[in-house]
Length: 439
Image (cartoon, rainbow, N blue to C red; front, side, top):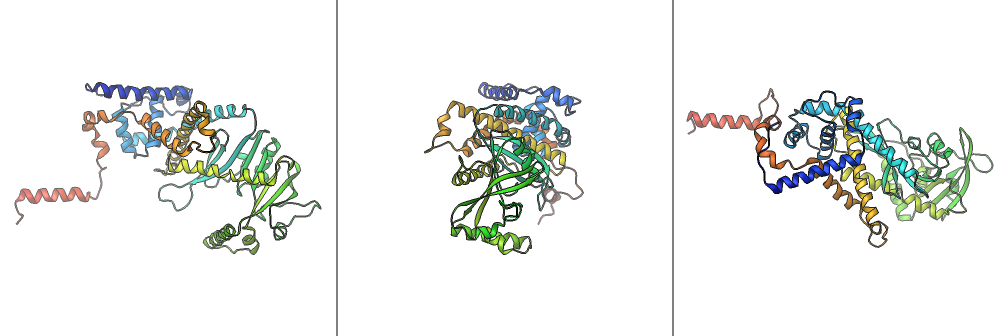
């Protein structure tokens, strides 16, 4: 690499501070970067990229900047990592899928071990979100998430293609946990593992997707029961699992009339969009919230169960932060290996930002516990995300003039059969000017 020219001391100091921050981030990861990179064949021949920490920085910059491969190569030159073409960057992203996944799993396992050893009850919310590749008209990838509400952090993540269904069985459960999930999860295959672990569950159902039995052993008809209700009510029901019959509480709460009408309007639109016939019972049941839970009625009233279910909205806000602040769905690739590297790197960044937030919560717990003016998780995530991007990017502006002559490979278009229109116009004007044929 070319030697840097003498720079302003203040710029050097600022660059050194950013470098120290990047080094401290690596130390906090407490991961064997070199060993795991060699083991997963992410870094085999050290040409241009000389170390695993430089490769990790390159990948995190690609994920956090959302720049093109060429501009990522230009940044790598300016920051001193290496003189990489866009193809070289692409190959390293492809080859790093397993490595980044291993780093992410290692961090998540450490976090999960810490959370599982904490005393008291853990409240976990489960949901999934979809991601589309450029030009796609549908969903291509699905990210399954589990969020610990008490500790404000992700405690489980799994990435699948669009065919990977939502299931509670994707995450490990413990006896001191309460799980909250929406209507995509009330299936015996997913609920059985967590119930066998002793965990408690609050899950929304619709009137016919879960076969339940009443005290007489006959199928319990939900809609006729709903037609008799004017306020929150509940029934004891049973479900059959591979381990035998399990008892649940079925809780039904009428939605206020104005909101019920809005819910039914959305139901009509959904069926029209999918060109599906609309059952009258489906339209009627849209005016109720139906919940299954195995929490005991002695200690957990129906109102409390409803209040806990409303907290499920927090994972929707978590997904919103991932997409709106971390640009989680700004995929720039179609190659499955690059897509997975990108998503895993984004999730790795999310874990690091949550670690920053956790340190603040330990230092200023009253900020998070205050009821009148609690801290905005959205704002602090935005602040730490921008901070993290600056640390990863480093102070490369001071080297721009020095290396500008080498940036042509990144700033110019590739050879093309059809000339660029602007270049052709400029050539035409020069030709006319030099020939003197302009009237």
